[in-house]
Length: 573
Image (cartoon, rainbow, N blue to C red; front, side, top):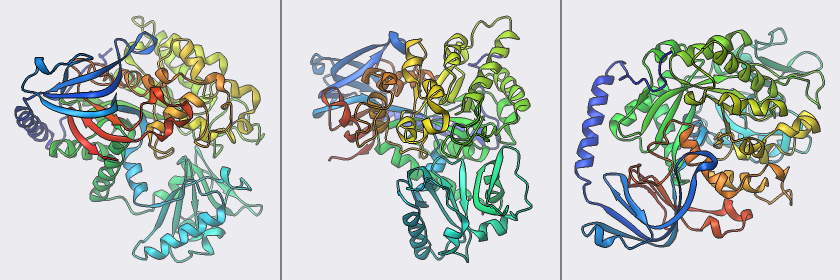
């Protein structure tokens, strides 16, 4: 078996030159940053030591940074130890390690920032009106594209249809992705261009929703979405780069310094490499290779890559299990409680899952398997168990830090298997507070016991890697911290929290967005805490979370964001 730490220089066209240029740029930058920076007059919090429950939580009030790394911290006046240091008075603000989002989609977020945003609109009529207004303001667009609609927050809680869109836009194709990205809503023009009729069969792993006469309604679930997406204009290299830059600015403003980008194409990887070489990648990116990319085998052969400045890492593969709960595409062991003929959808055929798990594992990459429903969660655990059974050297997989992304609906008896097998649950706290209005309707009161079960995982010693799944959810990590601690939405509903026995403490939640998230990314040796020798990635806040009521955690604002001691975002108010 090959080691998980095996590293090669990527042998893609021009990559040797790019790597050399990037390294030279790093040397030039470091040579000009020899003087120390001393930050004082603040209240800082960080962890130290091992991830998980053994981590130590402490406060400090002075931080010294040199060559991009922490060289000292504490509570005493360190000015005499660093007489040449540049002093930075933080005027009593609060300082935290840079936050880590363990599961987001950078390019998609950027694309969404350039499209019509339908998130949070609580009825169909207003949703259609916003699309119509957007189209009227953008006559130059060949396609009208948007994202964010959610029928579960509409009064009827019913899917919309193509006629709703045809009434306002019939001359151009319209394609609107549901908030979870597992369903799409098309007008008749888009269906026509895609060749979707009553005679079109459902693709494997997908569903065309039809009316009583068998005609397509315009709603396409999971793999069926590809029927429209395949005939849409492909994103250009310039548009991709612009989307990533827009997303990067947005992410840094919110205090996130490191993102695990969940499912990046070969083109997307090349864009990240190019940005890194040019010095325009200011955000730390840990890119998961998309397991559906045609170049997967070749990308695995290149080996795990990690840049010397830790800005870019490629060592993880995103594999696709099922759909989402809101669109009933999550695959369940037993039928949906509110749709007794429906088991959901498995996106990657079961026979391919074993092959992909073994291929990725043997290449020395982390496996990150998307599993919302209890069926793919069990399927993944079974496949991980087979890996250990087939390798005499393994007792568990902890050294590989394989992950199940979302681990959202898990059979209670399967939860201990995460710990036994050494599998990390990568979970998104705001999914619980976004889904609580429909989750129990979908799975019933027995299966809900293993849903969004953070406390159950923590109590058995599992390490949770927290994130947002942006742009499925809003990117702001303080929304996630709030949801993790309160199990409430930002209106503080329900009053006692939704299944509050599964809540985290603030320290556990913060750890899941810092040290534990870094561990789950193979980056805990250099980021995730403000310990001596690690990169000085930190954020300055307008409020001290330790002095706030839990209900107000989401109101915290990020004033400044620093990566390797360089300020990459500043908002004085």
